[in-house]
Length: 189
Length: 193
Image (cartoon, rainbow over all chains, first blue to last red; front, top):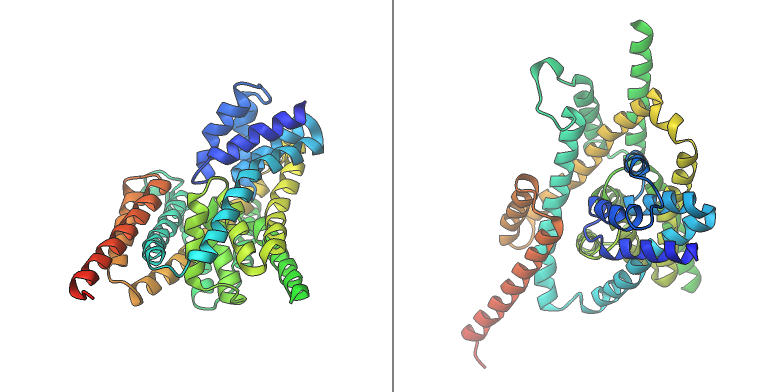
């Protein structure tokens, strides 16, 4: 039965992609593309592009995309539910353990260190995306300094930091401003 | 109390719908948005709890956004909170992806879509770095003096050496265990009953 196969395949993807995001990509390839030929390698590349351009976790996006293509809406639901099943079980247990043992001295010490690491990881993720946005991941050259992206980033940062604006409003504004500027420069040239 | 819990759970779902519709990129993006809304605006969680939940979400299997939604959901409004929070997290990507996969060609080649997305990326970076900076300030001001050093080491490992995040979090956990065990032994030596 195709629905249970979809469910089971994406359950494995949800189970073994520790660390989220890009960890899921090789798994999707190994579980979905190779044995079942549910999607071709070209469609798989498209899928990664779509997943990067749209909101949401890559695994959930992939589940919807593949499920939809194989078995319509029911397929999308089966695959997505499969992919979040391990999280629902394991993470709920973690939530329970956290609520119960949060105050323990040993756990306090561990969590203190974890917090410090998480702050570092968030900073690192932010800086690598900054490099990606400003320099497209390449080496910056004097001829192609993306003045406008830098300006946009600086303005957004100021609005958030100094004026405490709503982050989603700031982000949507950035999109709108870049779109407007693109249309205007297109008209001039 | 029970009615109140469902009300909170519903509000949580609406916020997750909103956050999940607009957050592009990896798990840390959505976690930064969750911190701004659930800690700074609603005060449903302490900042430290949000960091703890982030570490747990990161180390468990599955998508970080879904894991974080489960943890925050349980913490804020129990089982209804967890269920509605997860629903709020997965509905937007599911809807958007169903539509996008139908119109993929038109969507991918549209220059205006690309322009708007590129602008939004600059905004996303600003949000993450704003959250990171507030967290770093707090880390330096309060708590253990060892923690900033640990954070510096974790940053070097992640940013410069590209060590896998799971390895970094596990190492931090091991260091935390060792600190607690050594601390206990020292106390026993100084203060024998």
